[in-house]
Amino acid sequence: MGYGDITKVETSGASSQTAQQDKLGYDGVRASHTMAKTDSGRMEKYKVIIKNVAKKHDVDPAVIAAIISRESRAGNTIFNSDPPGWGDNYNAFGLMQVDVNPSGGGHTARGAWDSEEHLDQGTEILVYFIKRIQNKFPGWSTEQKLKGAVAAYNMGDGNVHCYENVDSHTTGKDYSNDVVARAQWYKQNGF
Image (cartoon, rainbow, N blue to C red; front, side, top):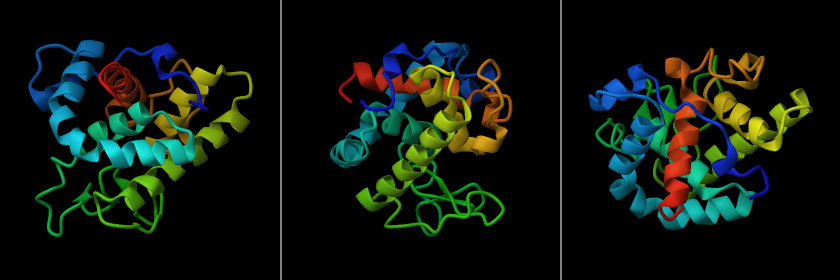
């Protein structure tokens, strides 16, 4: 895809804190792969719209699936909210948990929480961060920029300072490493 080869992005995978969500006795890439696999059944119902949006934005569908897996566990963590689709104390919306908090991303949610319109919005935000990271770090490789953009999707590009500690301010201090590892699993498994 146009923004790098997810299979070539280096990753340490999920932290033990993130792996604890599934009560895994291990962390790292193996834990990320396990969590991606756990979400794969729910992810199947979104596969067509993920691929449509990915094609439109020239983004690897595996990356979109991985963000969905990390953010909402393919809808599992937000399905029962009232109304459905809300997470992070009503500060984030949809499968990709678009930040609607005025002091955060400040986005206005578009579409239903599980719609193609929502995925289009979340992917637009990711592409925005890819371009910001490309401009901010012109010396980084294409794959490093992709990983930096994934971190920025979680915490904003102002918190990305260097590649070596790209996750220092992300949720669980592992967001991009976990998403990359999940994306690599999805890439190997039909996305």
